[in-house]
Amino acid sequence: MSDHGADAPPEMQTQKIQEGFQIMQEQFAQMMQMMQDSKMETAAAIQGLSDEQVILRDEVSAANTPTKGKYSLSAKIGQQLPPGRRTSQFYKQPEGSRVPKLLQNADGLKDMTKYGGKPNEALNEHFDNFEYHVRLHEPVYWCDLLQLTMSKTVQSAISNHAKTLKAGRNQAQDCPPGWYDYDELKAWLKDKYHRDQYEMELLSRIFFSYTQTGTLDAYLTLIDTKMDLVADDFSDTLKKMLVLAKMDPSTSRAMSRIPATYVQSYSDFCKRALLEYDTLKTSVKTQKYVKPPHKRVVADQAIAVFELVDLHTSKQGGKTFDSPWKPGNKRYENSTPPAIGANQWIMQC
Image 1 (cartoon, rainbow, N blue to C red):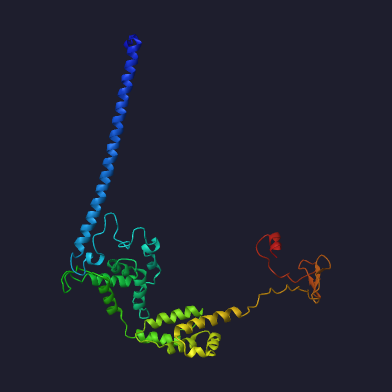
Image 2: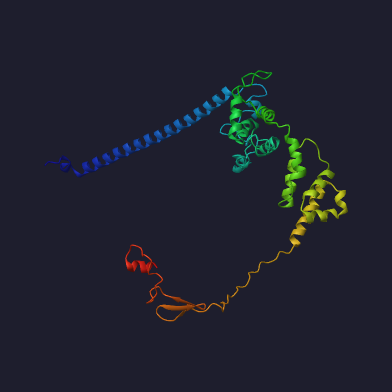
């Protein structure tokens, strides 16, 4: 086997090795450049797809939202948001001021009781609770968020009625089909689920049903919430009379003995009532539970100890008992034993 490289001078061999090493370096540099170019192209492609999705979402939103008028998205949200910033409750907030995630996701809506359209449910109270929970969100989203707080039956009624709402039904003829804002949905729900008898039944519960069963603070919160739902105004004297009649009896007696109770405002009355209630509850001495001592059971002397007289006779309690196997015992001579072995029958007996 001939090797021409082996016959070459040492200087030529060294030169060939250097040339080969240089070629390998150039190839490696080309490969790294290709990988870098491919990485940049991939990043550019991903950014392009992201930009296309943003543009497509904006086009879909623009197609379903009027471009002018008081019902347009621009009229509700305002000017165009800066690039890379979401249309959320962060709009118009100073840089660095961020709403906590718990409020941002409207998790408080999950704790709300779903409105089911029942006669004993307060729709106005539901609206007040909802508007409080979504106060940090743009009103343009309130219409959809409100539907999440409704029962399945009410949601079906809302979606069925939305199909009948046609575009351009307002005076400016620029609203889209379906629900276009929260106020329209709220007005329709009030008209559909209004109950003429609800306020009278609520007044009946306020005066005759609601009583203090827990703490005084919980009762006052309940009464204030329910009285706010009534169209008529309650005077401070009427409120104090109602609370005195339904509150804890001991606290009611204490408040009745105070002359200022009959001339002070309702808010001052509640503060003083809470103070009296807390004082009375903390001053009451609760009896400490004492475990009763263990009673030692003394055996009845009339019960005699078991006494074995012989193999077939025993005595207990002044009575004598004979074994059925005692010789001469004819008590069971006419009985028929079960059809099993004698030993097994004796063991079962």
